[in-house]
Structures are given as C-alpha cells and as structure tokens.
View 1 (tube, helix red, strand yellow):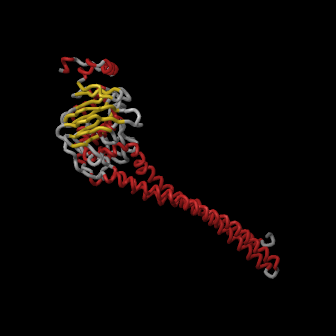
View 2 (cartoon, one colour):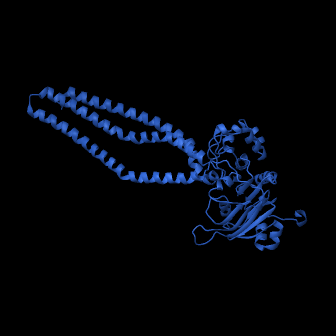
View 3 (cartoon, one colour):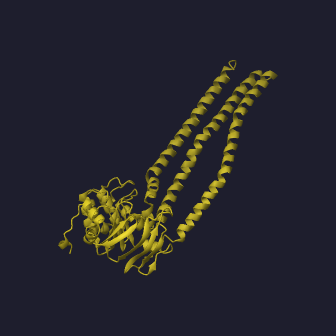
Length: 434
C-alpha cells in the first residue's frame, strides 16, 4: 500500500470525509427527532399517562372516549418518531460498510492501475474485495435474525390486539358516550350488598342503606371499615352481590352510565391535565365545547372565582399535569367546581379534605354547606368536622353497617363512635343540635 501513496491518501480522505458526513447527518437528524419527541412526551403524553392514576374519575365522569381519543392522537404523533429513533442507530453501520467497500475499490483501482498485468497483484485485489464482502455478510445474517425475531413474536402482537379489540367492544357496548341521565326523585336503596376482594372474606357484609334525595349523609368508620369500597360498589366500579335501586330502577351494567351522569365525584387527590382552569374544570370535554360561563358560575360556588380574578391570567392561568400553579385548597375547589360543572344531582366526597389544613378545610366545609339542600351529598371523611352539617351518619365497622343516625344519637348508643368523636375533638351540645 505504501507503494501507492496517492491512492492510499485518496482512500483515507474519502473514508474520513464520507464517514464524518454520515455521522453528522444522522446525529443532527436524531437530535431533531428526539427534541420533538420530548416536546410531545413532556406535555400531553405525560398528561395521558398520569390520567391512568385517575381511572376512577374518568369512568365516573364518562370521559373514556375523550382520553382515548386524546391518547390516540398523541400516540399517532409519537409512534413515527419512536420508529425513526429506533431505526437511526442501525443505519450508520450499513453506510459505513458501503463507504468501506468504496474505499477498498479505490485501493484496488490503484493496484490494478499499477500492476494490472501482474496476476499476483490482481489476486491481491480480489482478496481485498473478498475481505470487504466478508465484513458485509455478518450484517445480512443479523438482518435475517431480526426478521426471524419479528416472525416469532408476531403472534403475540396479534393476540394482544385481539384482546384489546375485545376489551374495547366490552367498554363501548355499555355506551359510555350517552348523555342520558337516570331519573332520581326519591331515594337510593342499597339492599343486602356484599363484596369480597378475594372471594374468601367479605369486605362488606349485608349492607342495607337508604339515601334520600336532597339528603346530606356521611359515611364514617375506622380505616378498613369498607367506606370507599361501599362507594365504589355504588358507582358500579366493583362487581358486588346484592341490589342497588335508584328510585325503582335496578342498577345494572347496562344503565350504570346513566346513573354516573347524575353524579359529581370529588376524590382525595384531584387529577389535572396540562392546560388552564377552564379545561380542568370541564375535565374530559373538548376545548371547543366548554361552556365558560358555566365554569365561571361553578368557580363562584366553589369560592375560587374571586381568587383567580386577583391573578394576572385569571381562569386562563397555566396548570401543569401535576397541579403545579395551584395550592392544595385551590386544587380541592377545582375538584368541587368540576363535580358541579355537569350539574349533577348527587355529589360524592371521597376523603376530599383529608390532606388539607384546618383553615382550608373549614372554608371547604362552608362551600359544602352552601351546596346542601340543592344536591344529594354523600361524604366519606376521617375528619368528622367535615360532616358537621350532615343530616345523618352511616357508621361502618369491619364491613358492617352498625347504625344510621345523627352524631348525637350515635355517640349515645355506641362507645366506639363516641371514641371517634373524642379523637376528632368534636363536642356536640344536645340543645344546640336540637
């Protein structure tokens, strides 16, 4: 080779320049794609992923279609980037192989030019080409391995899509998009309700409870008593033994959506999506369909509107998917406003004030008191001060409904309930309650 300095130098220059050009091209290409993918995953895609933690809220509010479409739209944008970013690292090795072959050809041309009439040198040229081919063949083997790997796992992917389609048919056969509302005029009647997580020991045992229209009823009990499980059964999120009637309508899988349409649900942790106050109050509704006047109205009811007006952006203030930009009290008021936005007949508060300080809890209790009488309110609370204005209390213990009555009545009948009152530092004056 050193006998052919010109061709050797040309080969080195060609290999260096061509290699640098392809390296720079793929590096810039991958950086652009990675940046765009980051923009998608950092915002809307993460919002959708985080929404999986709010699956209960999604099902209760009937937002399955909204988040499914949202996820589909974002996924369709992200998938091409993932495909390209997966492919890009594999391409350069083939480009380098091609560059290497052309480099070898340049050297072979040099040899043939100088020693074309000498068979031994021609043989050397073929040897060099053979070496180049030897380098390419392993890549062909690898490609075949990749194809075989795809063929092996295609059946698994087909099974996954088949199960997914079956799941979607099950979900949508219950018509989650219906806006029909179940009539509710008299009462909700829970009859002989039992539930077990493991089919061995019941978490709920023979629950019988009537909730009147317009009533404010609290559900009280120590941790593990079955309070949240009872609410999940009422919402149709768990399959239970027993019957639940709304007026004279028996709740079933076929009409549970119409029942959820009359419910506003306020959980302990409020889920948010990246956007503003409007999109988070009208959660699960397309931006173009949001009734801003309705949002402002429920914000006033939740005592949040005036606070927002004091900020520079007002209700258009930006909110991250983790709720950044709002205090704990404001988050809970967003939850109450969200529950009221659809004008439900029933409000369910599931430990809605457990993570708040006493001052903010007191303000939210005032908000709940203003709603009382206009809505049927069902509230679970460890802090009994939240239930101070309840009409009745349902006292649960070890999965059983012990009794239903006022604070005063239950404290006089049951030492365990009296102990809960003492721990909550609630003191009732009999004459005042009367």
